[in-house]
Image (cartoon, rainbow over all chains, first blue to last red; front, side):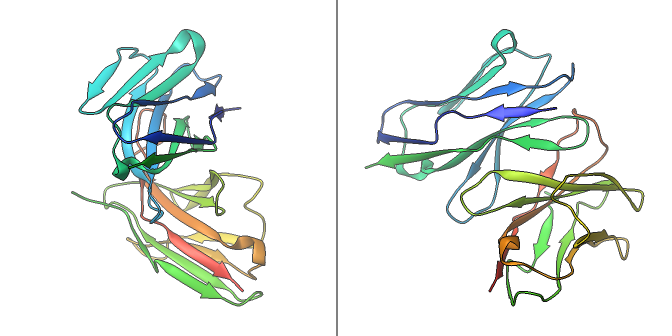
Length: 112
Length: 115
């Protein structure tokens, strides 16, 4: 069985602050992919990042960075210098053989 | 860039009516999926479909639901007799193959409102 846990239900930050969204996962698969999606108020799922289980190298892309630690089954996501447009619900997800399992989401509110 | 499309973007129906949600997956993809997101909740897997057969389904996908690929391009989700609790956003997705290394591409969703 797969499980994705996002313990933070809602976070508020002031614009330009950094914010980290936590994600912890469980899977029996040895090969899997982890994702972060952004869901703005309009409802669509916007793909942000994909990481495979063999690649623990952390990455920075613009204002986004990811910290994947297999030893603790965590895949955290950081937004640097947050902006109002970052306000959305962020979902961590795990891709197994057939389906994607999503976490419950973290609602991020960036206050101007 | 190829993308998954879904129609309609918003569907309103009366309880007990049948609805069909339509999806056009990316053209060279072979695996198709439906997910559901009740307002304010997480996205949940409903069903996967390959070679004109359901390959996996969740406990949510009961006899009221069915999927079909009626032609070479469309992939549909039918709800036979809608209930109030079917109100949700429905996402279609597709991938080239199964396996965790293959990304699923999601459509923009259809918001279903059952009155």
